[in-house]
Length: 341
Ligand code: ZN
Image (cartoon, rainbow, N blue to C red; front, side, top):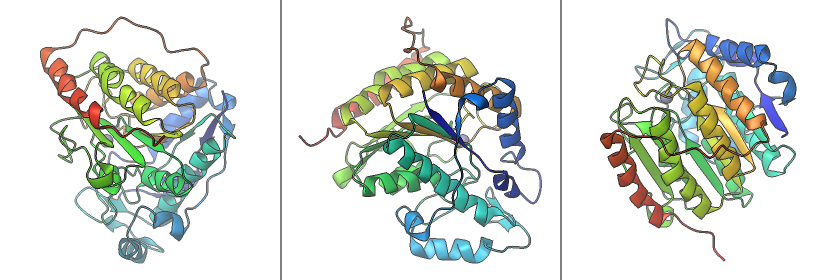
């Protein structure tokens, strides 16, 4: 498998004025683990690139971009855009690089120069809406990349396995049937969106699929959510490219949430997603325990590089509350749009 990898030391210049879980050490932990496991040498290093204004405007309102640039570009000291979302000198450049790099990798994958890619970027993106920064996110990297692919005529599936619901991504494509947005997330949890009933509107009707999971759900519940809901939705939608919003805060050790996924669970999920669509980009979103984050990304990279088929495992045993959550979400499947003949 030809799997690209892109990261940049300039992502580390984005840092909070004080202690914050979304910190530069996250990328150092991941790179350290990839190198220690010998995985980095097996991947194709790709350069990073800043997004253009035209690329950003496919997912964000011009007025929001003007305001963000005015506050961030050339900022000599940091500050806060809301209670969670910080910026510093270097944040504007990092945000442009993150969105541009995911876009560039997505295009390389769409052209089949690569089978897949891993974008190790900061700041994360999936909470940023068309007009608002929130939840540590400034620019919605995956949405910018998806909107670029769609402009070239591609069908795109976004699969968001961060423990938080990607309200920004959902919002940007809610009325757009060319992008399938599927999210598994803990519920209730920040930002409070992502109910099963949120399924898109207008031309986007059915192209949003949410699988809220109860606190304590682990590998078996997560994989059942994919085997029974998300993967059948992808099969029905038939995307050209799959973009994963790859957050690792569903890990059992993560301090911000209370799912119980393991690094092996993330690897099993990655193998299924790779099998579901042979052109994919995994983009870093959350994940705040440094050890768990490094090991999980390395496990996913190993799974993406691996040529083997996903193992056929006996279905796991779920708690009744997990079984009920997945059964409820399965009702979304019938509405997922199929490609025009
Ligand atoms: Zn998250």
